[in-house]
Amino acid sequence: MAHLKMDRIFIKILSILQKNGRISNADLSEQINLSASPCHQRMRKLEKSGIIKGYLARIDLGKLRHHDTVIAEVTLNSHNMESFAQFEQFARSHSRIVECFKVSGAFDYFVRFVCKDMEEYTNLSDEILSQTNAATVKSFVVLQHVKEFNGYPLDELVEDQPEYIE
Figure 1 (cartoon, rainbow, N blue to C red):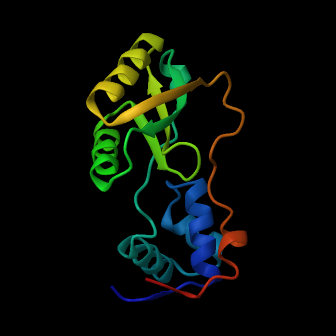
Figure 2 (figure 1 turned 180 degrees about the vertical axis):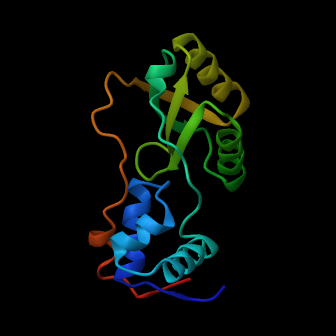
């Protein structure tokens, strides 16, 4: 894959797209002060490079139905590559696990679940304990979502990075 030279225009495109993935190319090109064709070419380069992985709609699940969000610390019984791979495959394949992070520290994974109710979560945590090498699943029920993810602070994170991205 060719190197992509990141510049302020690419960063501006990404900043706008992460706030509004449905923006038209005409509106995007106007906001970044670039004509439509070069703007479209830059978007395609960002997609082809894998920097833009896809586009999603942010959904207010609470307006669709009641649900419970649970965040859990998961600790495995043994710390070999097979145990990690088994748990990670389980996490990737389960639709109620919406995020999973392998972490350093006192436990191995930080997992976010979205379930219809606590009974469903209880069954899922039992499934984790019986079907993976998990020793413990320490659960925290989310009472209130205080701050939603609204995009990365790209201007701050990318400003001192190398200008070529593979």
